[in-house]
Length: 182
Image (cartoon, rainbow, N blue to C red; front, side):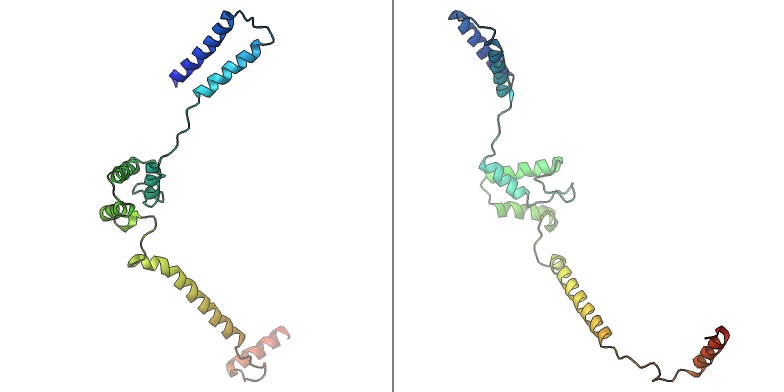
């Protein structure tokens, strides 16, 4: 970056010397524009160039997004700032340069860390329950709610005077009505 700023200063100086060499006088109206042009050139040359990712970087990121960081919970190694994640990205880059396929690299990480290293674990064994369990739970809840609602809707309603109350309850009810005047 220092080289770019030095180059900009050199270009501005060369332009000014060239104008003096050609005996072109800088009028007062022209000086501010030259100053603005020089400042603009300094700003443009001091901005770091945009870096474009190459195909290898894209491949490393694609694989790194499929692996969870063992240190940072819930983050892929592509997004993790930890040192271990940086080391894992370097290993992925080395293996890609060596010509290994994406699946081979993922298989090696699974062999070292287990299925838990994958951001999307395989749907087999105990992790199959993680995928299917919520669906079964929602279905069972829907069946339970349906059965309860049908039972409540179709419950037989007994008329008020149809069944004779228990004699002890009838005596207490009679005493209550006499006592409170109802």
